Image (cartoon, rainbow, N blue to C red):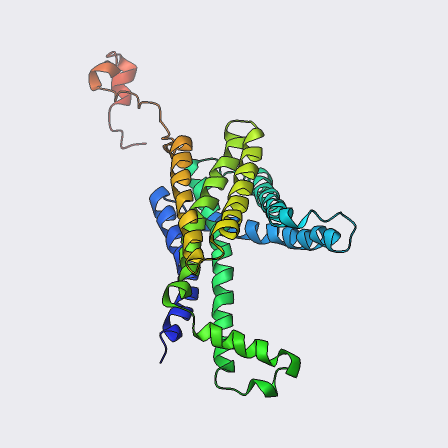
Amino acid sequence: MPLAFITLPLNGLLMIAIPLLIGAYITRRFKLGWGLFWIGGITFILSQVGHIPFNAWFFGLFKNGTLPMPPQAWQVPFFALLGGLSAGVWEECARYVTYRWWAKDARTFGKGTLLGAGHGGMEAIILGGLVLYNFVYMLALRGRDLATIVPTDQLALAQEQVSAYWSTPLGLSLLGAVERSLTIPFHITCSVIVLQVFLRKQIRWLWLAILLHTLVDTLIPGIAWAMLKPYDWGAYAVEGLLGLTLILDYVILRWLYTPEPTPEVLELPPLPEPLSPASLGEAPETPENLENSRYNNGR
């Protein structure tokens, strides 16, 4: 049995498990529940509900001639920049909206990291599910006569794709999980940056998050395409470039780190001093007091 039967589904399972493990660590580290993790995940989904149709419409304007196509030599960096900017605007504005109108109590460093873990984690979970679905689909095609289910004009391409899938090298078959483990910290960083809008009352932190997201989404694919495309190890180099962003994540998170607020302890007023017999004094010995102190069985 080829090793791909193990590594390909393992890749999808790790893409699902890694964000859950990161979420478990953050909830334990900052003593939080899972609510903000799932809020961050829903935030990612909602951002894509707008982001994906917008990209289809906007980039379609270039294809149908509504907007002029840039020169051939500039098309890759031009569209990489627009794609990165689109992702930055939609995802970072979605984080802002969540902080502003939904997670109104998420105003600490720990809560910001958990929201970011959920945002990036949901992306990883969805992609991991697609990886597993693709594995099951390719498994169903393995050994079958593709000529009975694929049109003749597409048969050669389908056979090539199935053969290439099952021949995926060991390292490449696990790169999806590696990539998700590198991108979730970046989403955490962006989440903490957007949080500063509300902690410091300055909207410029949102623009900073959009700029950072745009640069990362533009530079890494751009460098990979321009310099590494001719080489077989290009995919590994791309993950190496993503790995370098961990340094940036660490520096920014250390810069913006603030300790979690300590729970407020309700201070009760001091109890009054107990009364002593001496403080009560002695009742004067009057005929009325002496009469009232007797046991009167007749009454």
